[in-house]
Length: 403
Length: 176
Image (cartoon, rainbow over all chains, first blue to last red; front, side):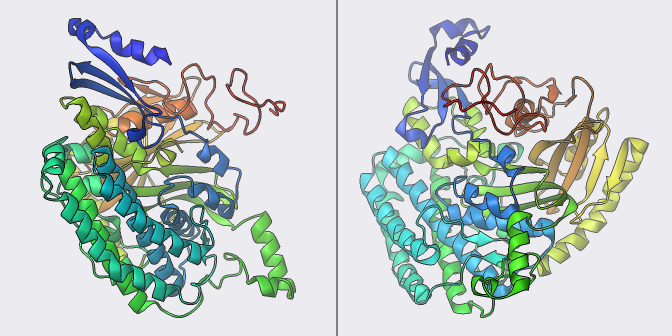
């Protein structure tokens, strides 16, 4: 462990001996997981920041090579573990993109609903933890109260609060339960009022503004060179959202705006997330209004699992079920990449297939991994107490970063 | 996946003709690949790949390196292939550029001086596949710890078993 610190100290800079090296993490609460930062300090000011990642590496990409497409779905719950449903959706849609099938409209609408519910819950945690790190305990508790309501909804939908594994290749695990949409409607009817109360607590709060405004400004050029995505990219003023630029799952049929920032500081990143909460609410409202009828799985027996009741009675269905579970879907030979706009940014899956039910290679383009690199650039020059604000504003998840 | 996407594709096709002209300048060093899902893809020789990427960035506006990763074609030669995905936000277009890397000491040129995002991604490829990146400022392991032996995503690295020197393993016997 000490070797990396030595590397920092070994700099041929004669100033280095006067600089103090501070190790932050991997257990520091405001690093939101197991991120470690080696900070080189000149008094209270950070002169160099070296993020050290990998503490949560579980070898998911290696595991994926020995698994059929369905078997990997539970692993995605543990990627961005604040938005498991959105990860499920991204994975399954990427697999369908590789295999080359379309899913029925109702399944698409359910997936859009899942993604937006996850986005709300992930942004609520990001916002709450950000606020708590800067001392606003109330906002944290209010955010968690709202998250609790979302988790109740997710539990009703998928049977699990956290590890949902809700999607399947070709559709979703089950149709929406009775009464779910009215529960969701009750939630989104009261939600804008809650968002307004968060804004009331923070947006013009003197302490909050002082701590976040003009802190860690990211320029557009840097945002592009560092390949930022998600709210961190949009806060710099670049209007780029995969839901709009490359619509998938019928996102082109929903009416919503992409909030963008102007400066690219911590305050803009906060504002972008607040606005995205409102936009997601708008999308959810439209999903409820438009929810199409029909099947929730593709009617291709070589792709999606048959109804359980028919498996117990019919021979064809039994054979299909057996083949799909043991051998998986037969993917074509070739490469494919599909990226979804997740709460943290662009979550993409790159597949290299040699045919058959197992990917030859699966790469997870994790937004947190790519976004975190920018810390080396934006942390230096700030006070050490602002590092906490920067981490909160970047809003990353180590499960996804380390894979 | 329908509607707008289809329109974007047709726009993309016209833009690609300019890129194809650039590909022509490199002669047989760049091969246009037939992609499964219609993404414009190229296989570029390691000697000119960085030049190609630089010119795409500077002349065609491909200012974002969405990601880069590698694939192990075990038992084939060249064994590794580094795959870059470049993006132009103005044109809403992605390109894939595959660069083969083979031999005893597989290596390609680092693009960290073109894209900051490449830094960690190249370290990850080094860590997982053992493909070196020439002129990388800090080519160390990133996900595995220092002193770890082997490159886990290589196809000849065992999926199960106990790596000697691995901390915290219960040790139920290695299965190589």
